[in-house]
Amino acid sequence: MTDIFDHPAVQQPYAPPGRRSAARARAAVKRRRRRRARATVVILVVLVLAGGVAVTTWDHMSGLFHNPFAHSASDYPGPGDKAVDVEIPKGATGAQMGTVLQQADVVASVKAFTNAFAQNPAAAGIQPGTYALKTKMKASDAVAVLAKGEKVETNVTIPEGYTAAQVLDKIASVTKITKDQLSAAVANPGSIGLPAEAGGKVEGWLFPATYTVQPNDTATTLLKSMVAKTVAELDAQGVPAAQREDVLKTASIVEREAPANYFGQVAEVIANRLNRGDPLGMDAIDAYGLGIPSNQITSAQFNDTKLPYASRVHKGLPPTPIGNPGLKAIDAASHPTPGPWIWYVTVNLDTGETKFTDNYAEFQQFKSEYQTWAASKGKG
Image 1 (cartoon, rainbow, N blue to C red):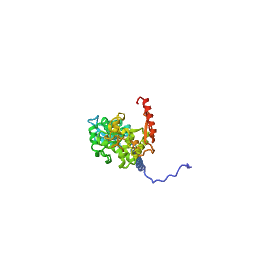
Image 2 (image 1 turned 120 degrees about the vertical axis):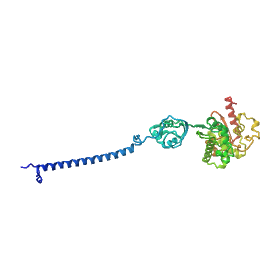
Image 3 (image 1 turned 120 degrees about the horizontal axis):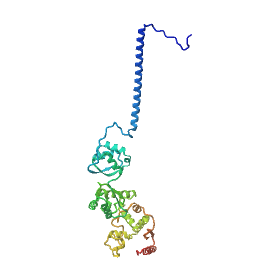
Image 4 (image 1 turned 45 degrees about the horizontal axis):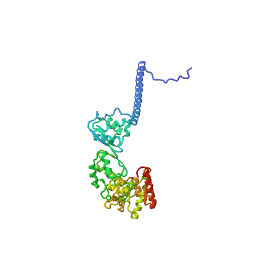
């Protein structure tokens, strides 16, 4: 019998034993060569695929890890040489910061800075401004200084109601800008952008706010920014250029005459008195003109027609604003609170309570109320 798994052999041509052995050997060699060729192809395919994965992975990860095969960036060893102030612009990227610093010779290359920037987690919080650095710093040290946020700048705060003289004194007291430099800038109204309607007088046009003074700021640039701020606020209130000066005059009086919650009513009193043709008769105006507190003004001074700011004898608004009003006062002067009031009295200086009336007898009662309060405080 034949096993069911046996297959008929294929009849091979007869060959002598020696020849058959040689043929089998040659066939075996060919089989080994084919297997090696297939293995080589497989290895090459694997390497190609692996290379593709590596490239893809590197593309995605290069932003997170340092490339060990990249050329090293030129960097200074530090710690630095000469002191230098460098301004970082608003919205600057790491590369833009690096360019600024390279141009100032703080870092050796932009690449060194951006590498250090990427490696410092605090670098994302770097703020615009001027910083005290050194030339020839190590890039990582430069990034660290910027990240601390210790900027070379001065903040000067101008309170509402300050006179121009007080503003200039305040600036000179907290910045490197001198009083002489400020006075020279004021004497050249065009250089600080003072509008024609100001008549060359800066009073009222130096907007009260907090200003950041950079090392390269001058008296001219700082005062110009203050004037520009005033113009911007007047424009925002819809004040025509021809009315700007009168609005600032009114606002400056309002700023000094009553607490902020009464600004609109005081502005209306001023408008009502002007419409009636009455003198304004407001102590703040006289005090500004004389340069002394209102409680030191004599009756003779109040009624001296030779004094241009004598508000009891001269009708209309004063020759200039009597200070630099803030936004609330400008808003009140632009949009007074409607009412019939002609008089008002702050009856309690501690609380600021102020009463308004269009009745003179009632006005006298308010005055008595104030006098009673003042006496209780030992100010009568």
